[in-house]
Image (cartoon, rainbow, N blue to C red; front, top):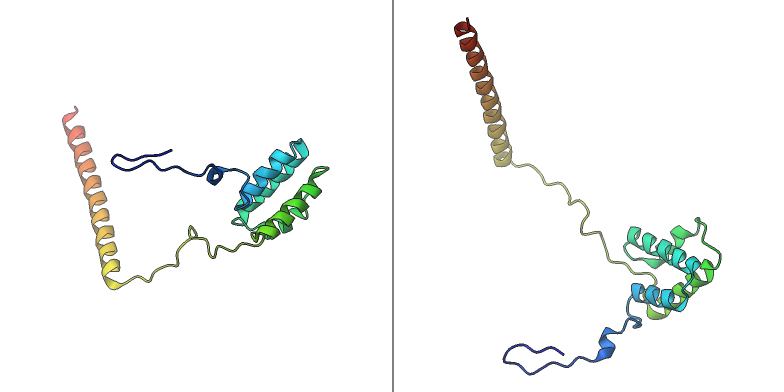
Length: 147
């Protein structure tokens, strides 16, 4: 139950927070982990989750990537059940479009930006040259007074 100051309490339906709802692929995987608590099933589903990370949650591609890899004994039936449940829920072949974290296309460089970059490079070189000059003059002054 939640209530904000000055507002009546909001009562939520406890089924909203049920882990066994079949609305997401990871919910189905969690259900399978609870229904089949064995090391082989856990290892199989761990491999599926790892592949889902590489395919942006596309189970069809993840299963295709697992075809060449060896699954533990008893893992294939659970994988088939996962595919069946995902197809029933309509989440077997999800496509989220291009990766938003991929590199953006390069932008063209205009004259103003190139000029600012050239000035920055010039003043950086000037600063390094002045630092070298001051260092040389300081060493010469030490050598003349040293004795």
